[in-house]
Image (cartoon, rainbow, N blue to C red; front, top):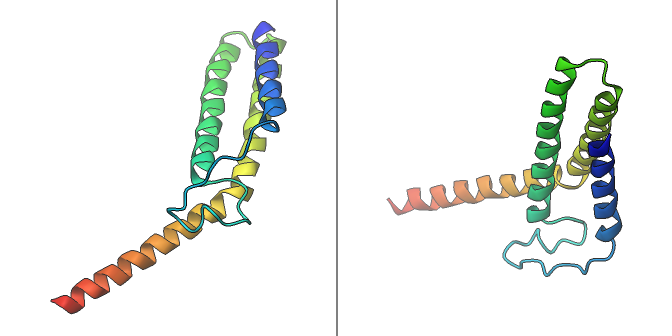
Length: 123
């Protein structure tokens, strides 16, 4: 039960402090970093994806504990909470990061094709 409350307190404190930070200086290296339609940059999206993976890994350990003692209702509640958090963060990733990353990959592929075409003309 203590672990459950610890997890809840950590996620609530992160959510509360998230509003108080100053916007970070974004890189001018890529034109997509400065797009006003993007609320998150690539670094933040990568950190979000890593956080989702961490939540899922944490859930895996709790499932092992549930398999050993399926009567422990606290563990069932804990696994449900963490699964819900992972689902919510996955939705945020899907909305704010997935299209931006797909667009960046599309631009890289187009640049590689253009570079290859230019290199082919030189030969």
